[in-house]
Image (cartoon, rainbow over all chains, first blue to last red; front, side, top):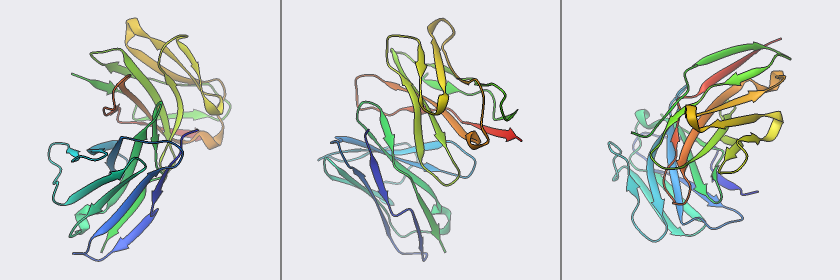
Length: 112
Length: 114
């Protein structure tokens, strides 16, 4: 079946630095990928829709300058959290659509 | 408005007992329905999906779900739960033919009693 690989699984960074998270579709091409954020014991909150070769579409309330999304190829989308702060600490999950929606294993970001 | 409702935040069942997790949806077009499971600190794993055809869908790990259009429901069932089924379960609805976002319910946390 379809596989989405997400790296890193966890990352700890200092406040003020930037962190990049990668999402790859391993055996299919994905023109569209989705980035979610999940707070503890809560559901997934869609942050943005990543479109290959064009600008991402951000959900209301999500800062596009803080959460930079790049979808340069049909198999790779990246999310960069810029100038990270402790409140950005969260679980980030990507998803890509093939015949359904396949999710990566998530990235636990901790900003100290 | 498009929405997914999972009325039960927590459910506790004994190991070996049957399980039903409820899901109701509101969606303007013909829906594409999903159930996902999430273990702590992990991503989401697809249990099953309904696109069309037989309204009783079989999934992995012994789960099944039944699509009832008249009730706008897509309840998840398992005849006999195992301790390893303890996790968070999410129902979701999305478009069939477009690369558009899916909408998640708030999730149901399943607890298993030994």
